[in-house]
Image (cartoon, rainbow, N blue to C red; front, side):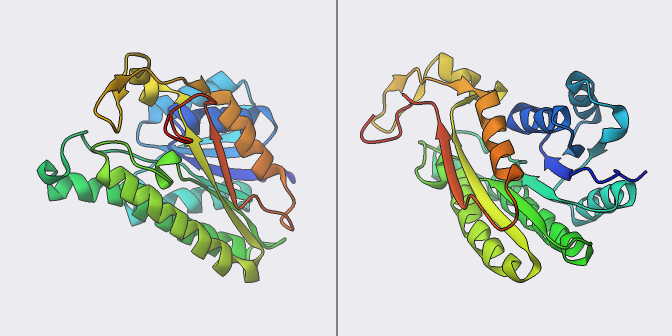
Length: 253
């Protein structure tokens, strides 16, 4: 089925949290969205909650660390709607919050595989589609996180991959220029999702104390991504930070 001129997006990690909020907002705004994530039932629930026409959405169970699964995601999207205008690289995972020296190689590799290699594989697949389509080009938005700037205690794998996403964003932005592919990064601090619920009870701080941290409505993040996505390809938000105003990030907390 063609999309009759509508904008087409792929959102990874779309079953929960930030990915779900972005995918639902895009569907409600008239985009055609392929929702990728590990659990089909959560993707389908997100589509239903949007109230959008069912033919505007695809639920595609995907492990972004698997090259074959990524290729299948992009081919299914292209076959259904003929093009790709936006990729939101959002899928991510973390390791247990344990001392760095106690992490296993497998725990390290899993975070790298999902957060970094997964984003690279999706970026690579997006390039192939966006280069070949007419009109040519598109936009890639990477979810970098506040952890792309500063770590939390016991977060070496997650922090390392999010710093690496910044490098991938810059390289993608440069390499995409000749193909009319724009790439930007959104760094998010304390959006109210399932992942940050523990902040309401208190989480470890750099000085060894425990503290409750303020959170913000995840819809603000979705709206920010929509702003980035709505720009013409001649303009790009290279980096955006959106965070709960009173979270302990700027200064010394």
